[in-house]
Image 1 (cartoon, protein in one colour):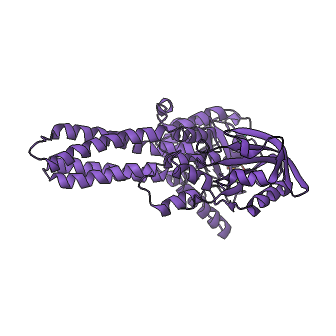
Image 2 (cartoon, rainbow, N blue to C red):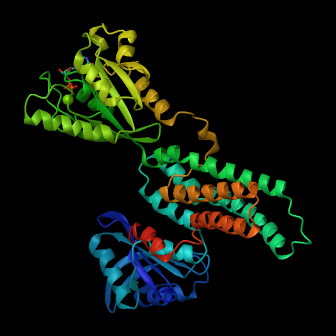
Image 3 (cartoon, helix red, strand yellow):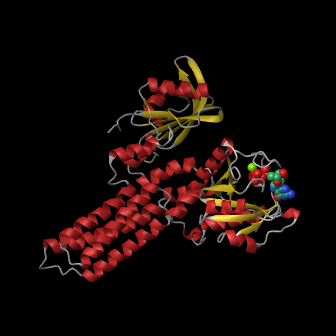
Length: 455
Ligand SMILES: Nc1nc2c(ncn2[C@@H]2O[C@H](COP(=O)(O)OP(=O)(O)O)[C@@H](O)[C@H]2O)c(=O)[nH]1
Ligand SMILES: [Mg+2]
């Protein structure tokens, strides 16, 4: 363990800003601050949380005018003594102050090391620590919300509750192993208890597809034959001239992308080359690029030109998207509409149909709402709020679910309690892995290494 070290880093983004913060954590944090700070009050005399005004000085040289916050262990972010020096937010200033701190005995913090100390110090469990990275990275309102719920312990409390039921079950079983003559294990009760835990575990697992969408957003791929208005639609949705729009069919050869937020959800929009018979090598490559994008789409925006009869190229587009989640857009309705819903249904069986005009902006709000309905499906989740958003948690819950299923089966088949005990321990370990209690060090290292430096 390296907790005896005092670590330091610049916690604000590298660059120019209003303030720049150098953060120090560890047993020598206050002493180091003491050596570089000149003000009316001394850092070493601060008993708890306090902000001091003064100057950072290197010998006779004044380096910057700062606000210095002293926070005393254990009620700090890392549970150790923490000092944060708010300097002017320039590269040279923060670097110089950091260098002075390092010269006086602190070591440069590794990415995520402050949060790792918070975890090791017991201030938060692993699911909460992971949420810290998510909250920092969140670029949409829904991602922020999901991360904040996890940070505040919503998931941890549920997992903890399920864990406590399993501990109870293990206690039953152990008593029956140790004192078989005294304890009459109520199998029916045990079965019911485990069944309830399994149900709760499975409902958490089921929330992952929604949780992943909330956290990462979706990839919506615009497809259609050439000239139906895909690039125009992309520009209209992004409210910028991102893609080249032209009356010449086949203008878009490679894919273009951009992001927008729809009701707090991050939507990554991808414009593709039109689907048609490839006549040359460039068109073949454009086609291949479109197919690659289609393969990773969470949602298709299938664009049809409503002002002209459909063609065999539209049918080819329909084949490409297949049963994938989709919204069908009848574009160019400002020019009048000749394509009926029935004709659309002949080639595309599912997916809501929305009328729009990329030119006038008509129907775009409806389109956005419809996109959300299709990807978020049942909006009932919205009130509940308990979602898992991370693959690591999903994998742990899968493990717990399988172990519980095996336990229930073995209980029915009359296996020995020793066997059940082993299965239940596996389920317990899996749940505890979410909280970081059974997580191997190398996994912890990997998780924290994905954080920013200074967090
Ligand atoms: N009237 C009308 N023209 C449109 C609309 N959307 C696109 N266009 C025109 O259709 C042509 C092809 O548009 P573009 O976005 O390049 O189509 P893409 O090949 O599918 O990307 C351009 O001349 C656009 O100005 C629309 O909603 N109404
Ligand atoms: Mg285009």
